[in-house]
Length: 227
Length: 302
Image 1: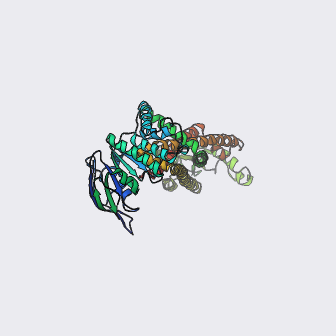
Image 2: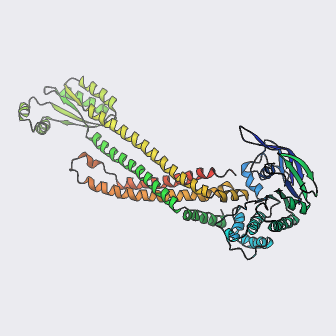
Image 3: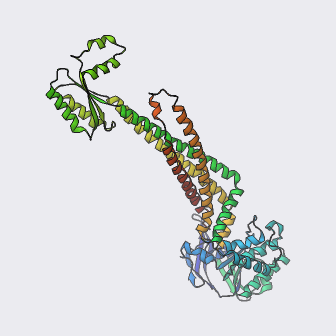
């Protein structure tokens, strides 16, 4: 599903910062992978390379069998329709209701209204937000807001879900709820890549762990722990 | 575009109007003012053109014939004039002794001594020549020099200074009004561009989410372009309304000038005004949409 071959990403023109150096790994369809490491180790950069928010200076990034490094800009929207994104700060639209936030992801890719009216309640039910469709983000708890964000990422049934510190702003109990939800989505068949430095969550899930240190992959372990 | 997308575009456009009422009003008012001044420069140019055309129409070359010139010499002069008719000369008329004395009566009405010196025997008869285009100074000067050499010609009066002034005024008015118009139009585009840019900055989070869920650039851009187009249209409609009022008042005030005053020529016909207003509305809409499209592109790099 995902393959990185000797990927290097450098930021800055003058004083250059190597965010990722010579990274290579494969992720199979339906896998759940944690990207771990301290702040600034390159976890978020890897996720940005996978949805073409950034391009590497060297190497190849394959998503669903296609190298996306040279993908023309006009084809990037199509790529992103197969990738769901979940963020630490949720990135919800504050002037829209829960229903509208999730429907927005379908509206902007031109899904018919009837389809949206059927799909959105089903996904909200899946993430445990049935009955809260008309609430605005400020009327929800942090955990509920993250569930809306996950519903929005999942509503188009993406092949891959990229989650960047999704539990970073949540208390441990709420974080566990979010992890159960991501695990459930993974079991439905979606490949999940999650960047985190939450040791407790990584240790409890026992999934594959790719550890980064200053942009270099230092460990790639099946059913790993944080260390 | 299917109905779902169309309703999305319209909903987003009007939601943006509601969210940015003050900014939208500012953009509409400023583009209305810029387009109003732009329209006024077009009207002023037209008024000047009408005035200059009247001046040019009034310009004549006068070929004075010696009183003692023979019939053959007059025929030769007439033939020389006729050769140019249809090209440099629009028309010419011969003013005989009686006609020339009538003109002398008018010219020397305040100078009876000079008038008394002229009689049937010594008044020079004249050909009054209307040039096709009084702006073609070089050719007309060459022509009048050639006519001066003809036997029987006493003098050729060529209002070169007046024609030169007309020509310079025409160039001046058209050059500067065109420059002013372009500058004002650019100002209007920049104002709309800035409004859309500010609106987009306020919605940058929304745009980022749209990009990340796979919306195309055009899908994001179109509501903003429609917003710019509507701002440009409303601005130009206000400008056209203002232009209509100003032109009516101007046309009415021209009637207060004396009947023979040249300023009466500075009218702008309602047909011309209407045509230019349609152009202003089209320019306003295009400037708004294009300005917004360019402003939108800046925030699409996600």
